[in-house]
Image 1 (tube, helix red, strand yellow):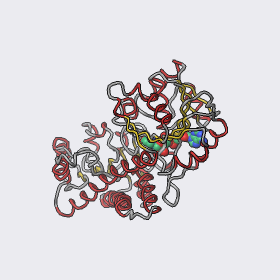
Image 2 (cartoon, rainbow, N blue to C red):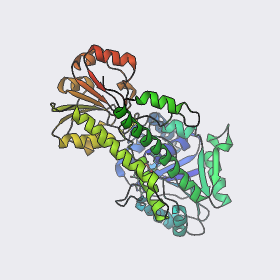
Image 3 (cartoon, rainbow, N blue to C red):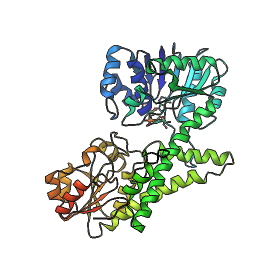
Image 4 (cartoon, protein in one colour):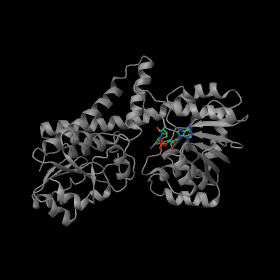
Amino acid sequence: MKIAIFGTGYVGLVTGACLADKGHQVHCIDISEEKIALLKQATPPFYEPGLKELLQRGVDSGRLTFSTTPDISGAQVIFIAVGTPQSPNGSADLSAVFAVAHTIKERCTKGQVVVTKSTVPVGTAHILKTILGEDIYVASNPETLREGAAIQDFMSPDRIIVGAEDKEAFDALREVYSPFLIRDQNRIQEMNCASAELVKYGANTMLAMRISFINLLSQLCTHVGADIRDVRQGIGSDYRIGMHFLYPGPGFGGSCFPKDVSSLAFQLREAGVDPALVSATLSTNSAQQHHITRTILEHTKDSEAVGLWGLAFKANTDDVRDSASIFVSQQLLKHQKKLYVHDPQATHNYLKVQPHATTTTRQEMLKEIDVLVILTEWNEYRTLTQEELTLLQGKTIVDARNLLAREAELKKLREHNITYVGVGMRAT
Ligand SMILES: NC(=O)c1ccc[n+]([C@@H]2O[C@H](COP(=O)([O-])OP(=O)(O)OC[C@H]3O[C@@H](n4cnc5c(N)ncnc54)[C@H](O)[C@@H]3O)[C@@H](O)[C@H]2O)c1
């Protein structure tokens, strides 16, 4: 099947590379000359595990092509996968989506199916239909992949949400996804466009709410002598609740949760529905970021130099959009701290936003600092080497992910007289 995709970001590029790998002919379009130049050389413009190999295969096969010119001729399905960032009033900024819609409108031919993969508010498909006209089918297919596991998620989806109003659109999307559903065609869930649009906001907000809830409990733990590790285990063992997304931490970030929760609150307000529960998810998240920052500052009273391990908003990505590291860095710099930073993948993106930090290797950093802060759950931060333990002797670790909160690790920290401050647990 011939497919066109607008936007070669985390979603559009992974979508294109996976669709091409399953045999579709995919043409990816982006306004960024720089990105397209890299992609033509099969070089990913961002880090995503497994993407480089997939991209190379697609380009070599001739099934995956790139350009800045919006060539959609012959494409049966056209995906829109451009960004939908947060506007100042909290709503989703749809200017890129509508710009693409107008570009398509100038070139489309009868019967093409235009599909939003971007996360867009309820009602957007309806507006797109108005722009594109009666001859074009419109569908909503919100993407559910996770950065860091994007290829695995796309190749083996737990569900594919398809919203449409016409048989032709449903049929086209069934054809797009049939190679991914060989064992279980029922993973496609078909509904109307408004429902599909709302699924994405509902899912992201539910996950963000869980994070805010466990963060709230973790703050209470420190006041009442409870330990969030035990509390989490106890709550999550209830099969109705489960353990996922119940990790206390520095607050959620990334390019999706903050803006999507904010957009849902906006949509609820617009509809006259009380958004209190959703709004509290955001304010609790902000409170958690402040709480973690206060904790760090309390432990850096006499110290000038702080080290940050982990800049990406989560492990296995180089994405720092709305990452806790950005907020924490700003606050520490305001308090005249000298910052040393390390991340396995995200340093270059972080420095674009926060150039006032010094990058080092993780060992070199430890010679300079008095307090080490762990902000991202990269696996490589889960244990300290003997050399690192020696360098940290007599110093403090603020572990905003509780990565080292295991008895074997804590024992080593005690032996080296290292003060350990986790989230929602007693400092040791
Ligand atoms: N990143 C994720 O994990 C994720 C997961 C699910 C859904 N989403 C949603 O998918 C959408 C895209 O997210 P992303 O993270 O891939 O964004 P991104 O910022 O990484 O990529 C967006 C791309 O669109 C390009 N673009 C902008 N205007 C364009 C235009 N007129 N024509 C062609 N290209 C244009 C940009 O240059 C950029 O390369 C958002 O709505 C997001 O909420 C993201």
